[in-house]
Each structure stands twice: as structure tokens, then as C-alpha cells.
Image (cartoon, rainbow, N blue to C red; front, side, top):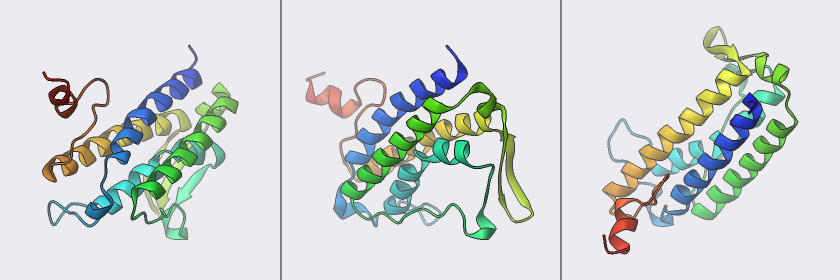
Length: 168
């Protein structure tokens, strides 16, 4: 398996789990914020929907500079919009990954805010990081939903909610 095939498979699998979690968010809870240092669910959902497009962004650019207004996420306030944006971003990312070469993955990519450099690594390393970010923020959303007593789906097998529904 090539590195790009690995990324295609991993992104496809993580997208299924992330989409299930996004679909679980009730529209009425988008203002929920469990702690003053936490994001709102709306902000977290917007971020998760955007992360699905990171591989596309990384493979079609050489850098992202927040100081130039690049990389702004669309504010999302309902689940239907979140799923539409997420699905579109995943489709775009899988398409560009499918067309990528191993040399494309070895090229450098930079994330910065003017002079402050956050990431300066290969595109492959940044795509790997984006998968980690998707998993991390999906788990964070799961905690938010649990605090709201919303049943959550399991990412790699049944969740406690799904097990209970099956009588276990």
C-alpha cells in the first residue's frame, strides 16, 4: 500500500465515523459551551466540517497564512449544513488524494500567521496531522454531546448508547 492509498483509506474510514457524530448534533444545542475555555458546539462543528477539506487544501497549495485572511471557516448553525459542507470537503479531499503522487506528498507545506510559523513540514505529515485533528475534535464533540445526554455513535464499534439499545 502506498502512502497516498493509506491516506485515502484512513480519510474514508474516519469520515464515516465523523459524519455519524456530526449527524448526532441536535440543532437546538449549537450554542452549548461546557466551559468558559471551550468552543461552542457551533464552533466545534464548523471546525470538524472544515477539517475534512484539509487534505485538499494542503495538496492544492504550498502554504496557509492566517494573517492574509486565509483559512477562515464557514460558521455553521445547523446539522444539515454541517453534513453538506463536511461531505463536500471529504469528496474534494479524496479526489485530490486520488490524483496525488508520492512526490506531491513529499513537498513542503507551511501554516503561519505572518511571521509566526505553526507548521513547516511535508504535505504527508500535515495530512497525517489533519486525520489526528479530525479524531481529536470528533472525540471532543462526543464529550459535549454526552454532557447534553445525547446518544452518541461509536466510531469503531458500538458506543455505550448503541450497546444499551441492543440490550447489552
